[in-house]
Length: 124
Image (cartoon, rainbow, N blue to C red; front, side):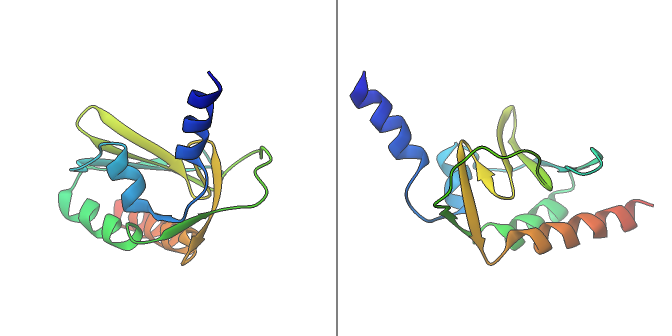
């Protein structure tokens, strides 16, 4: 039992990875829908246009996520993102993937914030 617990924690902690590595490891290969939810308002935007999905993924897929030293539980989040490949989904917030908190390089916050605000303007 201890060995299996170690294996689970080893998979979620430890190394710096690109966002694309995280979602492809979760078997998300062909993203056909993206939901971006604003954590401060609860509002969300759903993207199903493949050109917009590809544009968004090109902005974020190469961002590197490095585990933070402090893994204490936190409250709230700025944006939550769900990537869909058919029925399969991969959910994360800008600093949390699975049960691990991360720093991103470059900082993913302004990239997602700008993209989300662009979608709001276009949607009006």
